[in-house]
Amino acid sequence: MAACAALYLTVGTLSHVLLAARPRAARAVTRTSGAAMLGIGALLLGERLF
Image 1 (tube, rainbow, N blue to C red):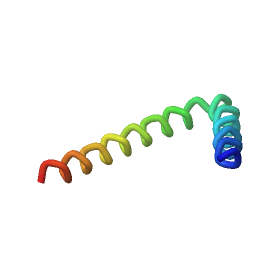
Image 2 (image 1 turned 180 degrees about the vertical axis):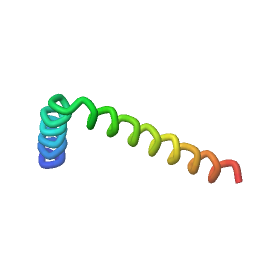
Image 3 (image 1 turned 30 degrees about the vertical axis):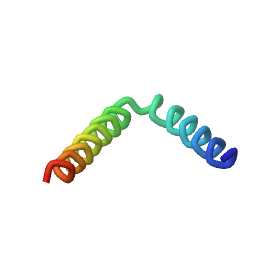
Image 4 (image 1 turned 45 degrees about the vertical axis):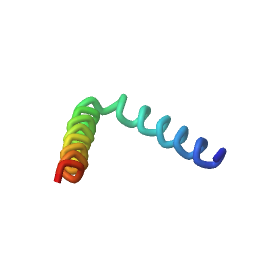
C-alpha cells in the first residue's frame, strides 16, 4: 500500500512539474482525459442499460 502511495505521489509531482512548464500540453492532457472519462462513462452506462 505504501509503495502505491509513493508511486502515485511521484507520478503526480512529476506531471505537475512537467505540465506547469507547458500550458499547451496541459490543455491537451486535460481534454484527452476528459474525453476518455466521458467515453468510459458512456460505455458503463450503456452496459448497465442493455
